[in-house]
Image 1 (tube, rainbow, N blue to C red):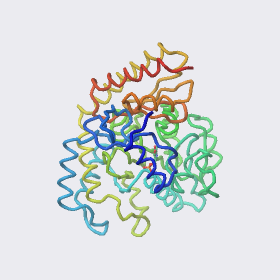
Image 2 (image 1 turned 90 degrees about the horizontal axis):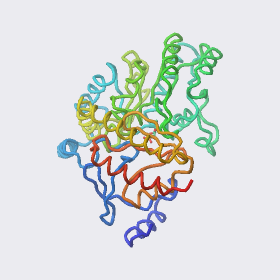
Image 3 (image 1 turned 180 degrees about the vertical axis):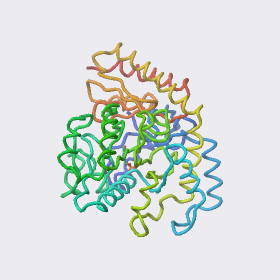
Length: 406
Ligand SMILES: Cc1ncc(COP(=O)(O)O)c(C=O)c1O
């Protein structure tokens, strides 16, 4: 990809002044967007099939979110959790309405939501027995990068080089009901919580089996264990329901969320059943920024917009269209495409070859996609994307698949 002078300058300054922990960035600097279209430093247009890792749930310059943000900027950005906060209360009310009746604690990111859930689970378990502090998580999961969240993440490569991780996590193969039941039996009375994603996002869009989740639900209830669902990537309408757990006909004790919640404004949260409020009394947990006026005003606007039945229907319909078209491409390119899977607008195309070169090629052709777990092209556009734009993006994708050498 030939880099303009402007981009070359940014590449050099990035190296000079920033940590390089994200590796070599893709050769583009987005400067603005409109709807589901992005523009770069040289004014080039891109269709967005990635939404900044499922964050820009309403796309760019959404009139409702923009209006709310502008109005909030003119009032107050931050006070503190020492004081009452109307926006925070209203956003929490919407979570009680759209998830389940309960209590919310706001954070600033997904990993902080994981930390809060882990700490809450420990408090819950240890209030019953000194031994009840273990948490089951599943292979190939991803829960964040802070110490607790990374320890919950059952992937050696995430722990590597950081010394001892937080003790008490037990890793069980994902979707293996027998192994899960065996582990609960082995650690009887010592497990305070189970944490899982319902679609492993960073792990390659791997969907949890219905029977597996039902069994976890039953076993956790029978053994007084908390069931925590990590909805950081799947939550806020991404799967065509407000939360992915709603596809499974269960109600977990705790959900974590972040990414799409603020539509681009950093915010996360845990939302729990009412009884769990007692395990975080004064002084046990908190954050300075968590749930500030600006972030919760954004969350409120996003939740109100996406919980409308028309919005959810559109997400489901658009997701079905993408999966149908990708399945046709799978028949067209059987050596290249191994599998197409997903729910709503959380979609993966598993390839037989590494996906990153295709991501670069897509970028050149004006389409933003992502590759996760080496070979899975991840498609998660803004939730407001139109059928017309989806079709345009899919044509680009088809041309890239057609040219790929297997
Ligand atoms: C399922 C899941 N949980 C937690 C996190 C961590 O969120 P954050 O990057 O906001 O800390 C992520 C991020 O990708 C995620 O996908």
